[in-house]
Amino acid sequence: MKLSLLWLALTGLTLSSIAATDQAWTWTEDSGKARPGSATLLLLGDINVEQRADPASAFVHIRPTLAKADLVYGNLEGLLVKSEGPDKDIPDKSGWQHIGPEAVLALKAGNIAVVGVANNVAYGRDNILRSLSVLDANGILHTGAGASLDEAHRPAIVERRGVRFGFLQYTAKWYEADKQIATATAAGVARVYSRNGTTVDPADLNRIREDIADLRRRVDIVVVSSHNRDGMGREIPENGPGGDGERAAGGASRASLFAPIPLGPRFSQAEDYEKELARAAIDAGADIVYGHGSHVLQGAEIYKGKPIMYCLGNSATDWIRMRPNREGMMARVAVRGRHVSRVSLVPMTRDEQNNVTMLDPSSPEGIRLREKVKSLSEGVPLDVDGRETILVNER
Image 1: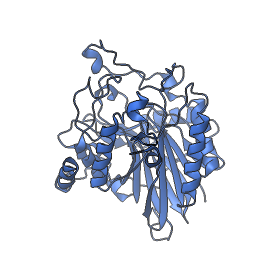
Image 2: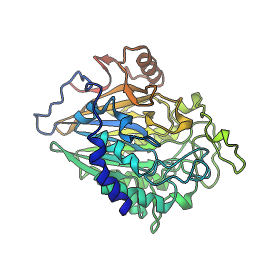
Image 3: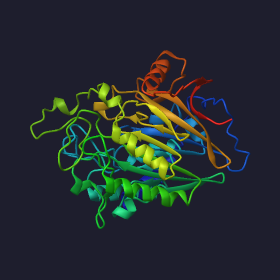
């Protein structure tokens, strides 16, 4: 595709102009890169970079940290196609704009080698395929969408330092199934359907179990992520889940296209279906499960010795209606001997220019975010160790 190749050609030029302004984060445990079967993985929440003169600037503060990791994965919150306007790209999502092919420069700048693309803003079958073409042209692996149902359920597999990582992603919300959800013969995303927020559709859950069991045989570390519904207390229409608590009905005023979306306490509560999905994923062979899409932090859990992070919140988020919602976490996964030995969390926010920054857990905002997650994580200590909050630590 000509557009994809254009951005591939521009990538190297743009990245060379970005200078790192902050030092790499200091981790308590060294990376252990000299030991065989040892690698580090960073997990990010929602990544939405749009309408920037320099897309790569979104990660300027944390670029050294991302660059030092062996592998970085996150949810790509947007399609890499040209926007037609905030009231046109997704008719049922007020104010949304596709992020455009230039957003791939942010991924490259952030050392993000793999992304999940199953989410509610993957809208339009042709748009989904065009977006995947941009990722392919830039050498970024993806999971969660494809030209058919089987391709949408296909994992992304990558090896780093002798460790094989496998990723799967699903979405629990969308707008119009006939424009977004993959079928046997039509492009789209992989879904995990819960109409009431309590249980997962049995057919979807069985397919996810099969995906994980197959991937388990092929890799050392299995990561499963999902794009959450809107939260508790919301009625879901018969044709499937919707979007971020906001509809752009035909008569929406221009002001409503840009007004901030308030995210109340219900968005921070992991729904029962999330817990069913996460635990079923671990039972099927997943090593790590995490969520995104609620745009705020949710709690964590240790299930059968494996970490679950129900929502890591935002990472880079330029969508104007989400600008005030700045809370997020980065998860660092240390792999030793080809198994997960340590998982830690670092709070994240964004500065006045809306660029991503990391927060020391002992800083006032770092304490607030850590305490919020801890209050939502029954029985999980979440102790601070240096500049990290520990979720899993095998000694």
